[in-house]
Image 1 (tube, rainbow, N blue to C red):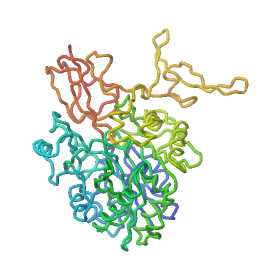
Image 2: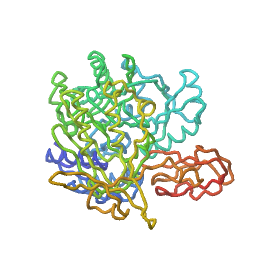
Image 3: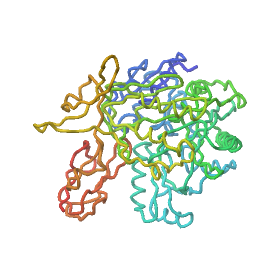
Length: 582
């Protein structure tokens, strides 16, 4: 078994790996940015070392700093988590060249499968067909137009070295194709350090089904059932579940066998996920993620197999201790990603800030994985995942009911979260009947009125007051009542929870020409200039927050009078960035 493992990541996944190391008696080493100096993963690790910097590029994507710490600590293993360097073959090779075990696949497998272009070719070479797409890197709009002329719109522009919906844009006929290419490239570079893109046909109503595989260095490879990840927004998952429901056993088995075939075809070792799109009884290979997935806990709950433990054992040279016949799926599990976003009636606006109170739910079959505690801050510079609520039931309806109960118990104060949208999804008849697709949240689900809201009033002196829910007892019975208090009092840590103000789509007031931003972020593009005529709804600038790009729109028709920001500027929620004169 490995003796000391450096975790080259942060947040929830770093905490998950640290705990697995502790279970196995392995010393854990954390790294951290200046902003994460006092974070939970730093507090839990046996050792912790500073990377410096604030942004991901300055810290968790700083190859030189990480490798130097790896050398200084004498760690014999490195776990990349997910995101950052987890699918970077050059980084994996640099680690292995130091004689350190990279807790993931061999660099050669990452090279093949981490690049979605060569991954398509590798799958086709072993007889597994993919969604229609190209194998040439995309650089200009003419390539997209040519692809669409053969396969039709819409077309998905995807990061070749990406995953998790980052660096993916869907273009429809008439869209600004070049702008989509530029945006996908920026997101891919910011999140993965590589900006190459490729094209794929965008299916109309697919389900996203994936297969977890485990392979050791001794030639053994198994699949651990399936997961359905179809409830998505912005091509990023909100809800995941295992196993995939409502698909015949024959098709599920065929998917599993195809996943093992793909893994063996690239001499894969360690944990990986083979993703498929499923529609009308057919499935197509989509891609292989050469890392641990965010949604791995649902597979753990239905199989009883600790995937991080398995990763550590495989990286230590051990052989898998079970075969395919030993894998048994028991019950059903659902994972909810609790993100720091205001659902904002379907706009899902990033909402960084300080978590003033975090209380996790408990009970049978209930698990909450997080990298935060009360008082911790969620920064605009990193992913917005607060935590993952994972619930198991003996069948799918039981798992849904238990998850809804746990969501009702979960308290996350100080930042807006996706919890209201999560409840709307799980409560919907389409979700219960498993008739939703990857486009259902954005195209069908009605989120009208679903937002993170704090009610506001002013007193007779014009001072702003907010509603605060306070528990009281009357004749021995507990009630929750609402009182109106000054905003400063509502922000205090004592008493009941407060809720964030609902964010707008990027306009100040009801069309007053003062365009504001709804969240903290960095300006990455400005689409207008002073004196330019604009229509209400036109994109004024692009704001990057929590690794996602958000279009900020004009609130009235008129002429741009003033632009108060420049590309690269950091702005706060509510800041006026452009003034338009009617």
